Length: 392
Image 1 (cartoon, one colour):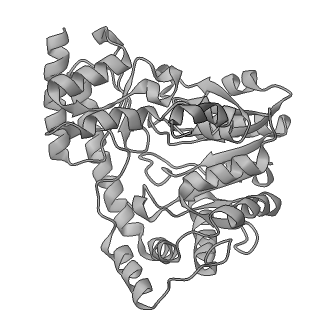
Image 2 (cartoon, rainbow, N blue to C red):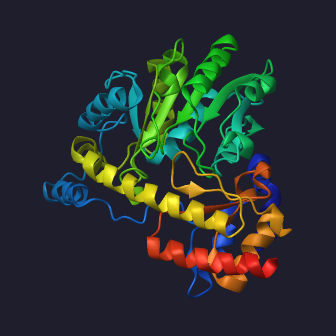
């Protein structure tokens, strides 16, 4: 029994069949090398703003180290429910329609486990964040991918969603602005998707983690469209816009019965998010707007530089509408996504993520994060330009 191989047939079938994260596998290789310029990790390079760090320290100094309510710190829920109407144009009750979670990742997991019966289908779009399909599978659902296309700026075509709906479809998952493509949804597409959801009695889970990092006009959340408030879970958090990745605090807003179902799971598993992180979240919502805007302005400048330089290097790259990623096409090099990423790393010591880490429809692309300094971006672009010219 000491041989680990003897336990392989004991692992749950739906877990043993899950692939490892393509991002994590690739970065194990990156971490074994020196002097690598990384455009890989989807994490702000900014330190959490000082006022939020001060609030964290002050919470400790006041001895705030206890559990909170399973739903989360009442003060934070109240701030969330003041902020969400301003940002997303939809109102929620902090007492019954909001739950604080350990990042958006836990909120997503809770939503899937609370809603999916074995065998029910969940439509999501690809390329997408790496955890969507595995999380659906772990909740015993059936993931159904709808590709987004470069010619549509990686936005989601409502007609493709409608074509994917079957009598067994229960959920539609949206993440715009999108990781890894930077694509977004305009008002017309949100309205069309809302009509599809209502017509087919679908519940929508909208992951809004990059919503503040939108570079054009911002539209309301799909939860605000006609017929959608009572069939939508709005997930959001502090990791990206407020540079608080390590705090691991997020939230979900939605109809009381859906939030209550999520809370049942949360209370038996995580119990509550860290009270210190929740106190920091209160400060971020009360006084973090100026810092958030300054970071977004810097991301905008970086986006313009990296997009222009990738196109100058010969890689077709559309300017993203949001988030802090570009998704250049690499098919003209004759390499697959994984070959391109590995050779670029080995020959030029630049780390990007193969597009296939985000689903099969990511083949032919790589993801580059511009959540790094302008100096590093320009150095990486010099190396990529040399690499592409050598391939040619």
